[in-house]
Image (cartoon, rainbow, N blue to C red; front, side, top):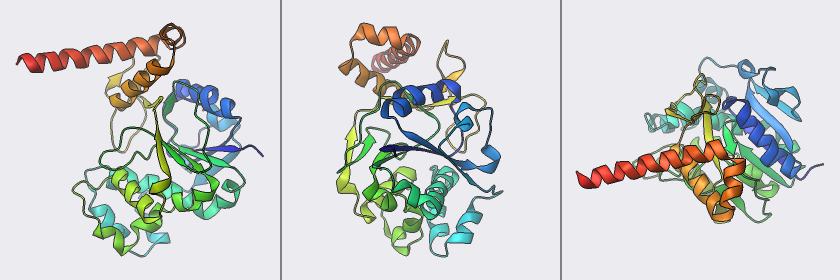
Length: 287
């Protein structure tokens, strides 16, 4: 049995260039097994990921994903989501949380056979080789916290995976409604869930070297990508800060000429974004 299991949960987005970066910098590098968790209607054999996963976990289709909560929970979950309308919690988080609960209820025995579980999304584009797991730490990339903690990617030792996945159980508690926050979103919910489960003290952040990608045709329940990566097969950036931070971290650890050689087009796009930001700040200061 391999030490690492990668779980990609959600909607298959990002395209083949994104998936190729996963193969090179994560799956092959760590000799990891791969589990795909999505809905039945999102299953697509034309996508390379679906041609030979180690595990394929398909959630039944719902016209309304809140039906899943009606079937499985009878606490305060509905009131909780109502508090997060317009922040992404109601629109997107309600779906992402379901995948964690679905995996917890049906496949925990498989997860516990691995030393580390990398819980992530389909749309993560990797620019460098993935870090190794730490048996005493839950490792999460820096940035994209939005008053909470980034919930897009984590490396979890198997000892913590059950508690890590219990976010639906947390938001179903009446206690979850007592949280005093002016911005109740996916990230603050994740942070409060980690606190509730006693996991926050085990979290360690590490320098980001990946960003959330998208194709223009990809469906989304929340943020629509508007930043194009020029000369790169219609790939787009969903969160520019991720992209810029990833390259800044690469520059700190990598020979600049090596970086230009291996990531030339992406690096030029990084320089373009940084130039735009510099000119924007300069114009603002002049005004």
